[in-house]
Image 1: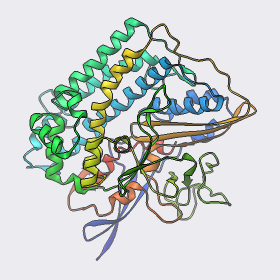
Image 2 (image 1 turned 30 degrees about the horizontal axis):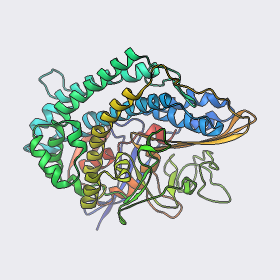
Image 3 (image 1 turned 180 degrees about the horizontal axis):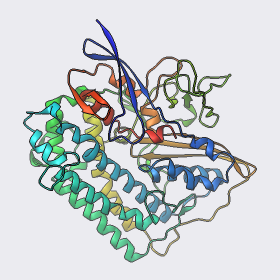
Image 4 (image 1 turned 90 degrees about the vertical axis):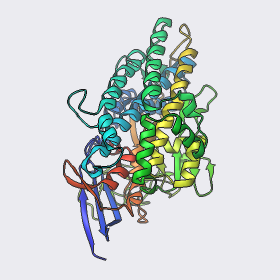
Length: 499
């Protein structure tokens, strides 16, 4: 077989730079290397600063995952000083985080993922005219296509009024603190917030799902999904399922089979609304998560390696750029858990939490393009009703914030779930200043390069076997539609990857 090498990128509709190097033989990918080519050095900026400065700096890592970064930093500082949020502070933080995460899922589906099915590569398919009408990118007039995408954008804009009220602004709210929320919510404001949530519920039930959210959230098997599909004909999710069947999305982009969740939406009892742990698809079981086994391996990244060990725990890790390093091809380190490659994101949260439909879909098809998208949409249906409950649980005259003082010497870890998955911050304070700060973002896990053992990251492995028999134009030329679907199913945020 004749082998050729392709370099694809940048991928449009992805925040930050992304380049994918492929080796191809006989029309299929045989090897892939994922390159995050932009370095910014936020971890270095934080060293030497006042610890609370992190709450202003880390949200600027990204304009999409800004609340997630704030929550991780606040939790790391809270862990360092031992403060515990009052229930109102926890609820307000959960509401802001859920608002951002669900907006991200909506944006991914309507603006990043589905427009790929409106292009010439799928001309003549039975569903394409309808897809063009609903999801065409940047179509001009209201009758020119992209109708549902525009409706989703309008719903998203109204949705962010939640964070405007709860946090003062979005992005980069300053309301999320180690001791809770700086913004107390009054009874009248809670009524307005409930109205925003119910507006979003109406859009989702009328357009995305075509049935009540609770009916979608309760789906527990592939047979139940097929029954629902006939009842929800005409909905955007039903159309996606038709497209997935016709294009074979269940055969594309199979992940590593191990899935990581830090647990989403903290609860007063110390647990999470969505459980934490590691789902092992081969054993069909949840394993406990020991964060002491997390390492970052810089062997194939443009960073200097420690003389004692290639891979270090984030509390010991370093960020020392070495741009001329031999054998490196990315600014992203390779996160591993006990040396293993893991996938993270909505699919991981649903598997770890035991959602039966997603477990059945992954058992039947693996962690593939279609199951990743389905997990994101199902998560929307599960979380919106929880947000209604959290709003009703707010006590307007009870405290939202607990005062605290940071010690001169301490260390802390802050874990949360961003839309794309597991996000962790590790910090140390010495003599009242930050002496160490390391961040492992969700896309750092999913888009990691090879480690010292030569094991490819989750996306690199998922791309192997992808066909290149059909191409579509993008900003840089041509790329395979299969490769494009696989990359987009992981929903990359490259500026978070190389913070």
